[in-house]
Image 1 (cartoon, rainbow, N blue to C red):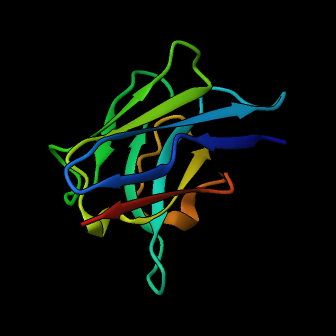
Image 2: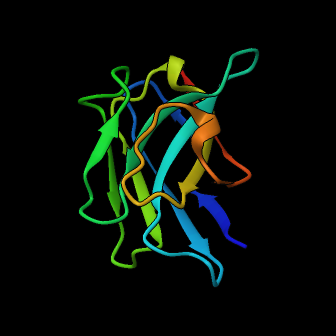
Length: 125
């Protein structure tokens, strides 16, 4: 089994920055693609970013391009999401996710195999 643990959420003012981290553990974890989704109250879970498990090719949602960056840590089982110029509409619970498919960069949440419990990001105006 694979476990994903997020950290780094919090509250910032509009225009501020936060960095989220996700660490994967479990004997089964391999070169998995990993990513982030978010869910605001009353809204569906939406894709934010994903990075593949082999060559770090990544994909970002249009709504965060130019502001967010996804990267893999020095350990292949960790990823970070650097979020700059945060806006109130970025307020949500952010979930880390992983897929056993190495090159999987889907924007559909139901294509991923493992999920963290989420970390709250709140952006105040």
